[in-house]
Length: 529
Length: 74
Image (spheres, chains in turn brown, green):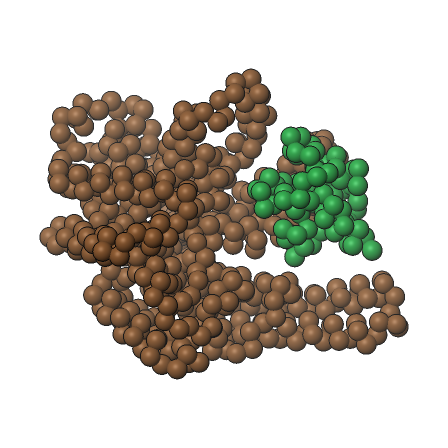
């Protein structure tokens, strides 16, 4: 069920009415039922995988929790009999038992994800190697990736690790845990929520609050505007360029790159607006996933402001534990003795960065394009870290840091760099992606562009006008958000103006949204990850 | 405490670590800094900061970080 389909709007309307009609005590159970209805639309067999996840994290989480309790009780009862060393040894023994259970949970859940998502990628690579020795090819297996599996498994893994770390006690009620895993607005493309954060409002009783619901609806409307008016429209131009790499080289690649930056932003942030908006109409608070990312001044900053919940997930559950693990600390020590302080200090951070970015790439998709994309992100971040002394020298010498033009330069540089890396997201393989990128510098065909060729990539003058208006509006809204909530400001305006604006926005989405011949409202880009 | 201050100052010479109390909240220390700090602390104090102790309240100030080291040493 697409967010942009009529059936979804109907589903949402029915849920909304029922949600505020049923006794408040059972609102969360209604929501759970709605999640399963929503998910069943994507295929009944997909539900089986989700149930395995729910059951495994519920059982193992509770077991780890019981071990925590038994440990605390034992230590309290034997406080006088045990010395510090004995207490420490006991704690470590319990921890290692808990770790075994955690690993089992990770094995089950990441195992499901790995088998469903990467089996054919592994087979394809084996076939390439077999091809070198003229051996026969292995056949691919037919595996469909259940909707949202990358998101709900990451959420579940986060929950398991938090319980293991003792950040919060495990959830005893399997139905509540099921609601957390299956919360339908997030199944399409995240955000990747944390249990301690989402559960604060997910299980609460909610009475109808006009202002919250209005805010939620406004957010949904803004999301639809970005998705239907901008993303689905510019998509036609992007596809024309990237699907014919032989013909569209040079300046077209640059245009495609920038158009894709607009498409991805409108698509992904629009989808998240819809997600957060839906949750808000139900009184539930979902964490923000973006913080005006295209205003970032470096790639590292960009990744702190784009797909925030994924970035913090990798930071907390992969980067931190990996880089301060015993083997890494040992490696740091060895490198320090062998190569000196400077290397010793960097080795764990940089090695972990590359591993994290390799994994991030792999999470985005089972292809070399994403792996190379991930690694390149890591390399750029490491390079910019290494260039820090130069930046410091530069800023000491020239006081341009706060000037508008310098900040504008930094923002443009980051946007171009990010868009260049994303070329790997567009073309069918790594070789073509690099070839297309370098053609920007080797094929001088800018004349074609000014000669009106941009009207031959599936976009009309009217489309460009709508896109220019849409992009300008997105920029203005982002700039305005620096001064606080736009919806708060709108709320203070007279009611007739507010209603007129809302109706105008609905009309714009309905009339200017990319429907009809030549357009097909598509699934969100991040849904495939 | 002096050794810890030295490590911190090497990371960010522009910050007065004796008075600053919002190193994480003000985004002065990023994830790279935190890992470098933990690696350096493990060298200097021979103490391993476990991952579940990486929380803003432990890294927001030099004092908080020093208290954490002391707690782990005990």
